[in-house]
Image (cartoon, rainbow, N blue to C red; front, side, top):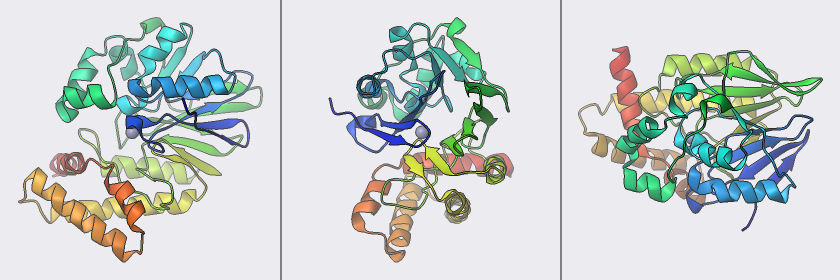
Length: 305
Ligand SMILES: [Zn+2]
């Protein structure tokens, strides 16, 4: 199996887990230290890629895994990981204590959005994690990496209410999960990712504002990879989210499907007018679930009205 690992300074490794069989869709990260940690596992179907990448780095055991949030593209494979590495501790939002030992409810909830067939085919079935192996996070708590290096857990709701980001002050790296949106390679811009039921602009912007106060050398995001231009990307994300909400507000009489088609057409026109090449546009729009974006924004507008 091909492994796709990129090493960055300060012993940070980016692992491409080939989500949905495609490269550059989902990154997990590994920080090597006296007490190493894996950040994100990816969906169940990506588990073989994750393991072969870890083994290519000579890693035979995983003892700690931090999860940004309970969406299955991030946490789906955790039961598989804990079956293989029995001593692994999972650091996650406290809702993980409820859901990871009995993932059926999580599975059913996600199935309602994606359908069970789609989930099984694309992300794979999930397995439980023993309650004793789960540690719930608190805002500001430190996960020790070395005597002079910690990973700080930062509660970061807005995309999901169970979202944490992880800040490694030593390297100036912020492991953001999905708080920013999607940035695919060769695109230097953010495509919002605003799913129901939790997306909330005010809450998300508060999270992004708090990030702007950190000294950030690089952003490590899930979809996809490590990016240096943190400030511009955060600004770009906010602008795009505002524009998307305005656009959706103006087509409130359309069904979700029709609104999703309009959003897509508008987005392509915008990307083209910015001079973005066709390949990059295809990459971005081919991987966005636009009906879900409409549902997320409309749900937010209803909550706020
Ligand atoms: Zn995600």
